[in-house]
Length: 78
Image (tube, rainbow, N blue to C red; front, top):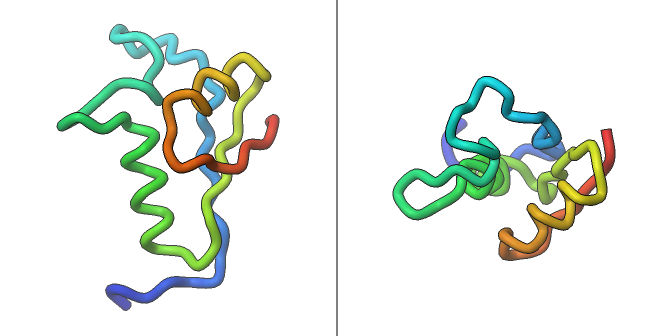
């Protein structure tokens, strides 16, 4: 199973308000120089055949995340 890419698409729910996370926006918090969102997207990309999708609530969230992510990812509104 290890190293295989599965023909599925991962969806990351990144549109929350991070109310219980004292450090601000959880998706943009960093660990070892990488945002939490980048870490999750990288893991999904390595595990699935399709690029992951990031679900957000607002256009402002999408733009904020889009500015911080490389490469560009697909976003949907939830």
